[in-house]
Image (cartoon, rainbow, N blue to C red; front, side, top):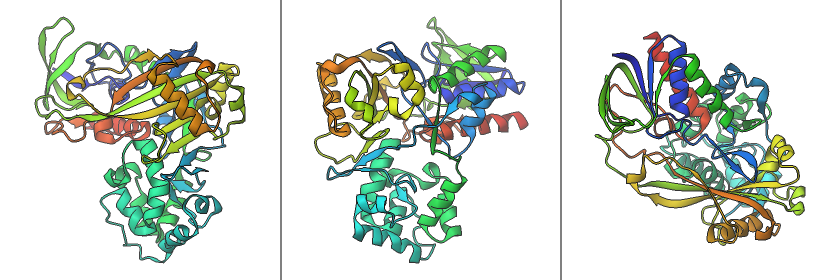
Length: 441
């Protein structure tokens, strides 16, 4: 019997395994594919090494920043360009994202940049938040319900919906406020209004930016975590798929097709137990990266990018990141070229594809995917992006976590997206907490 079996070699599994092994536990890490890192991996487009998915982490807690320091990357943490991002409303209006918000919830409802998006009347309605008793909306079951009750439909639809859709790929009505905005509900009760709660939460966040990155890409975290697997003697088993996950044992199919039962004092898993899960289709996501030689983009016409209302007409992308504006280190590496990252919701994926690992594939700018991406980039950035200007392109597809499944057996510790929600900050914090609890038990 080993001390701990960790199922899943994404960031959550790597962080938990590393902390456990560093604390003296004997750890077996299982990964069904042949690569570690999950969606935090790199791909090369037009000679540039880029993050395949996430390129930043939220600073609502210090979990990722602290981990970066421990991994020797503390001096490589960087903040994005301060010009910030824009948003496109349902009606196609484009505006800079207001500066004093949290997930689109304005901290100053009557600020000029808020009025520019929602209009005077809606801003006045949102300002009424300060007159409502703090209990109004405090027990809301969703972020959407909370904002609707406190600030009205227009603020929800024009500000919160496009920003939340870009960050969490879902509507605010389907998100638990305690998961996506920890502490906001308590701050509402303490401060007496949602706007003041937002300002209080922002004041507690890391100074300078709501997100940070790492020079060379977030993937450098995975590079260092994988290196620590060897340092702390983690037993890493690739091409090993869990077929049943129990409190004290995991049954697996090994790389050579054999079966094995691994007994352990503790089991952590970032994937549902196949024996307890009813297959359910998940939301598909596609990220199309364009590297373009287009000098007109030097002016950063939409700052660091744009988030798009899900119901906006004429644009298929739900967001575009102007990565060489967002990250100065990448602009230097790109040597005058521009990196644009467009994200798309692709509908539901086949539940039988759950074990597949997303890979990057080249894209021809003249094929349907390339034409769609250049068309959307042109519409969102306000600058014509011609296929002839594209010097490299790639597409990555993956799916969101299965949060509707039965999940895990009692006693198995859930980690990763399905348990902690999307976002490195929450995933890292939860994985480290889980590991710490085992070490002190």
